Image (cartoon, rainbow, N blue to C red):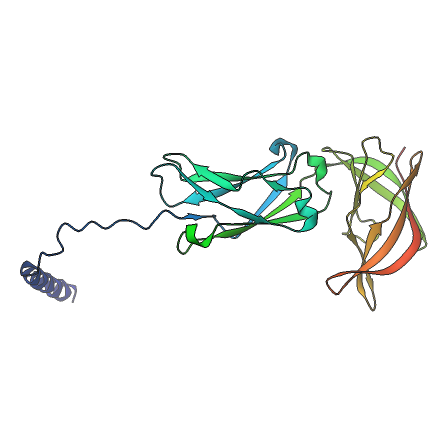
Amino acid sequence: MKKNILTYMAVCLAMALTVCTGCSTDAEGVIYTPEAAGYSFASTQMSVEATADDQGVVRVPVYRNTTHGAAAVSLTAAMDEETAGIFTLSSSEITFAEGEGVAYAELSYGNLNNLGATTRYSITLSIPEESSSISAESSIDVLVQRQLTWESIGTGEYHSQLFGQSWPQPVEKAQEGNVYRLPDCIVEGYPMIFSLSDDGQELAGWDIQATGYEHSTYGMVYFAAAGMTRTGNVLSFPMQGVIEYNGGWGLLYSGFTETLVLPE
């Protein structure tokens, strides 16, 4: 069977060569040029854990489909108001040197301490349609979150006025800054994270975060600290309990204080 197939293919090839012998040669000498230079991202999403080693910059690779000659492409950056208060696109024009197929957009955020302890920032970078490669990614969502290395500093006490309970509370501190984590605080699997000023006397940041407690009607309850007072190693947080509501936050509980006694 295989011998018959090979014989048939040989006959077809011979016929094709014979036909081509009589073909017009008008097309001889035509040079086909590649598509115009185009630019793209490697994917539609990029996740970054920012560290002190990054020196306040997130670098996003931008690719082009040729390495011939120097070139440049413009980018736009879209972000919400909070993110725009921290991140800037260092240059809206990305340049490629001769022989380079990749260059980098730089998103600057300054000092690592400018980033919230638990906040995830989203920046969308886009290449104009007329400059993008065909069938390639012309925009990318860059998700940036601070990377923290936690170390235990001992066990303190947590007093919850909202829930009317107190318990021994392990406390961890980040190597990268004055940021603290209370693992399994209200409910197992849900830590509370906050940052203090350099002198430890003021609350520098408390992102709205899930407590793990589910209200029977309104669902997950989140804590949003309204400030902090400190007396010795006792930190008192005037707190609000909020819920997700119509794409924002609705106030469910207020007028209560959560207290943390730091380890001696």
